[in-house]
Image (tube, rainbow, N blue to C red; front, side, top):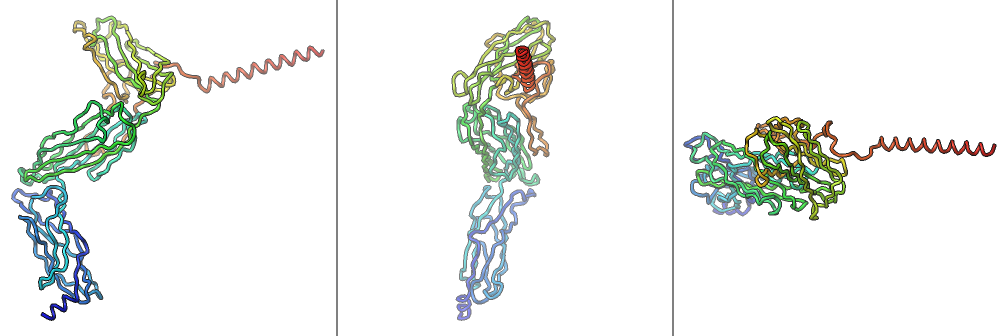
Length: 484
């Protein structure tokens, strides 16, 4: 007894870490009959601060029901004069029981062989989420008018778009959500149900049309994935500057374990100085047939920019239908003012057109010839005899984005949706891509009268110089004649 007391007085063993982690991945369940996983803690360090060698016992105590601790051999640690530390791990048998995330499940205790406790540390189980956002790709329109896509993988917690987002344009979230359970594990335990996705902006006025924030998704069986997209429109009156969207995903597996993850996406919303766009178009009547001699086309331009526009312009063109209209010097106030829009109705003749789809090339301009928006609006010519529509049921198309369509203007049908970027669902879709929204102006139509070029000024300068030289020669001749 005296020897033991002397040894305990000269030895003191401490656990260096204040908490010890047990990482648990239920994806390791790979058999129908499997009920527990064998898991080791992360390594932790024991230090002997005493003057003599000491042997201690390391245990996991206070564990929940269903957990089993595998006894660990006693550990002998030299005195401070030698190598007085030891790195150890403990092994536990863990049931499918806890929610995803972090939870304290017991205590790691270090005691002398006589039972005297030396030190303790908290034992925490970190359970991997079996329901994850494997990939997220965000598609949006940049301040330069380009379509942009930014991909993020499952490890990216704090996300930020690489470019600013243009006001009153679409922003699309392409999700790949996956159940990480092994498909050899019992289906009743591994299926994830009651899946909810929540998309919450920091400003309720960020998106147009007051969209839903919570989406109920289909159940996912083990090793199953779900690909889907959600599109919002940045409201035309949204506040410019930095915004944050919080994305949350929740679900519950067959054993009642719950999984929840949260991600934040940050980006800048930008309102440009010069930003005149085609806002809305309307055909009158709504149904136009090959027997109609004329039809009307109503268009509205809107200034979304921060500057007044004194020389805005608009053109509409289709070669096959003989349409080529140009309007110049349209005055528009800045977006914050009331007079920020322009509405005009065009009437076009139809000369026995073919029954098919045509595309009207619409363009808006500032500063006479600086293109700011390009739209392709479909005009469907129906066979004679189809009922003509009325103005009340005519088609309204709110055209918030410029098109990146490269179709010609001869009436052939476009294969691309206006303002959209086609996204592949294969595994190679993680590359960033810019798509220019501006199309090169048509060689057939000159929509807006151009301002003077450098060549024009050069020619004018040469003419002025010649006139001055002729005048000087004439003056010189007159002086000589007068003196003679």
